[in-house]
Structures are given as structure tokens and as C-alpha cells.
Image (tube, rainbow, N blue to C red; front, side, top):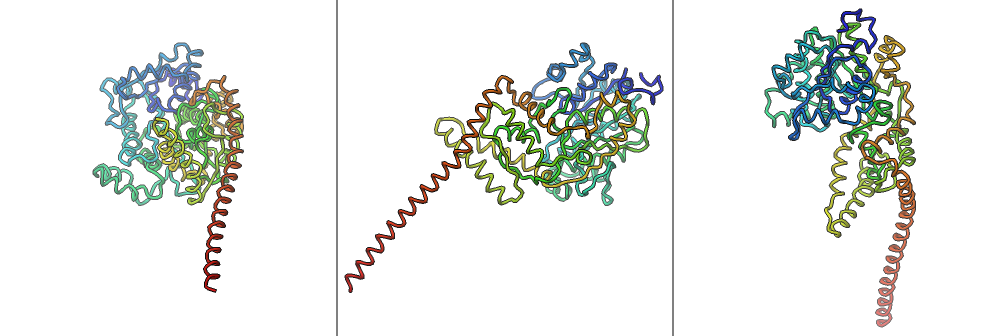
Length: 517
């Protein structure tokens, strides 16, 4: 192993030479990018052990084969032809005691692993508290106990989130504690509660936290720091993780979760109204930045052995702020430049903060067209779907509204200090200086990435998509005109009816009075 050399003199690539690494959450968005980066840029690494569980009738072996075939690893296969042979799956489950590892796999890990990255978590904001506690709190604690037994462990890096401790406007790089709550005793107490009791107590327990995800991630930090003992632990807090800036490919993203789903919905005309405060700073971070930071943090705590538990805020609000208004501008400009082939309507979106105005606009721009489209589909013998899709989308988007209508100042000093410890070559290869992000070019690549990797739009469809965009633009101009004509026609008809009705009434009354006179 690299320990035979002077650890403090090792570059990042040298540090990972001959090391075995254990990664949880490897099949997720962040996990895939982490595996790819290590294999490609740390070619001397000995082995990557990935925690995987059988899923939907698929064995772990099958899932590993599918994982290795993912397009994200194309550069690894070109540059390191035998790199993928270093990947080994170990069967387990983050929700089970001792992670559900067999005795042989458990022994394999404690004998060989020296670096651990923990990124497995449930990221559903509206998750039941019991499930969120098992995944986001008990899982890390089970992993901590395994780390404690590893014979060669030099670094355990836990992926948290910037969005905990949101009762503060300014959030520093430290683990915050509630002075009135002992996190260890709290978990012991919650373990003894029934499902229904815990569900009923959730609002009181979560308190000012916007959801169970934020609550449990903050609780996990407290427990890990409290119980770590001598385990070399560091915490990395990314904000809203979005598509890659550069690696593995510009704009790479493999899911429609969170911000990506909303941006894609704007691009195809599905989403036209959002509850967002235009002038607030939204904190997005390209996925390659926290990945590079994770790799560098493990190197740093192993080679420098800092005291305590260092916390790294991987955010942009402090160093390179981007307002929601600016994001909207560049997103729309990019969609108009590179439209998707399957547009429902001309890409546009209105930011609204008033709840009544939001409901009115959602009715006009989302649900009214949805009901009309469903009526048409039913009339043509097809299954109605649009109202259901909008209801599902609104439920997902509403969970983001707390974050798009509030702002925090995440202090991000530790990543800058870490950069100062790195060589020039390492800073270039494992870049995470958010001050260098050009938001305009990044968001353009983001749109191209959504188009290519999630919507699966072939580049050859771009001319047809642009033609369709022009048609939709003309339709957008014509529809208000047609509506105005319809309104004028209806008003004119009503006015004529009123005049005719009341004219006859006046004549009738006049005749009666004339007869009596």
C-alpha cells in the first residue's frame, strides 16, 4: 500500500495506489460518477467494492453487469482497458444490521478496505420518517461500526447535504447540535415507537425542518461525530447536485429527479408556472465538483490527519452565486437554441410567489389544457393521462418550493483551504473550485445533456425540433388573438341579447301604460 511512503508527500493519484475502496450508493447518480472518476484518474487503485442489493427480481451479479455496461464508463474502457475488472459487488442492504453482509464479505472488507465513501440515502423529501431514519441515520451508524473494525482504514467520507440546519441564515462548516436533544437517546427512543405513533409525531419531531430528508441527514451528522471514536471521519455537504460541467461528459445526467426534471419540463412546455422568488440565490452544484472534492477530502484526512471532524460545504452561493432569475434566463435561452423534439408548447415559465395567483395560473396554464387534452383522448378512445401527470408533477414540485422561496448563506471556506494543500496537477485533475464555473456555458451544456442523456434526442432531430419550435411560437402568438376575438364575439352576443331582451320589455311596458292612459 501507499503507507510505505511518506504519506504527506503523496499526490492524490499516488495515495490511491494499491488501495481498496468501499462505496455505498454506487448505483446512484453521485455514486456512478465517483466510481468512474476513481477508475479513470487513479489507475493504481487496487479494487472498488460496491454495496449492492438484489432489486426487482435482478440478482447482484446481473446488476453489476448492467452497471459496468453503463455509457458513463466509456472513457474508462478506452483509457484503462482493464479498469472495470477492478469493480466487485458485495451483496448487502444499507437498511439491515451490519449492512446485510455475509460473514465472508464482511471479513473481505475489514481485511482489505482502507477508504470508505458513503453516499447511499433516500433522497425523497416526503419519505415516511421511519424509512428515512433507517436509510439516512441507522445505515451510516451500521457502516461506522464496520469502519471501526477495518484494519487499514485511513478515511471515512460521509456525503451529507448543505440543506440541514435551515433554521439559520448563515450555515458554517461545522456539525450543529440541538442543546435540548441527545441524538443517541433520541434514536433509542424512536426505535421503541410503533409505525403509527412515529407517523403522528413526525411534525413535532421534524419541527422547522422542511422535510424528513433534511431532518434525518442533520441527525446523522450529529450521531457520526458523537460516536466516531478514533475513526478518521469527514463530512461533505453538496447543495442541489445537477448535471456534470465537464466529466465524465459535459452535461451528463442520468435521471429526471429534482432540478433536472423541472428544467426538462420547462423545455418541453409541460411546466409553465413555478413558485420561485426571482431575486433569491439558488444553490446548484455540478456533480463533478462534489465528486472531486470527495476524492480529495479522503486523501487529505488520510495524509494530514486533522483533528476533529472536518466539514466541507460544496456549494456556490458563497463563492459564485446564481439567482433563480438568472438561471431561468439562461435555461430558456438554451432551450430556444437547442429545443427538444417532443414539445407540448413553446418553452416559457412564470415565477410566482403569491399562493392565490399561483393556483389561478396553474389552473389556466396546467390543468385547463390538461382537462381539454384528456377529453380529446377519451373521445378518440385513448386513456386519459394529462391531469394525472400534472397532479403527480405538482406534488413533486411543491416539495421544492421551500428551497426556491428561501435563501441561506452556506459558508464554503474549507474547500478553498484544501485547494491550497494540493499540487497544481491535482487541482487541475480533481477540480472543485466553484469560482471557475461559467453559469451561461454550463447551463447550455446542461440543456444539451438533458437532451442527449435523459430525453434521448438524437442530434439529427435538432432541425425538426427548431421547425416545430417556430410553429409553437406562432401558435403562442395566435392563441391570445383568437381568445380576444372569441371574448369580443361572446361579449357582443351578450350585449345584443341584452339590448333585444330589454328593448322588448320596454316596448311591452310602454304599450301597457299607453292602453291605461
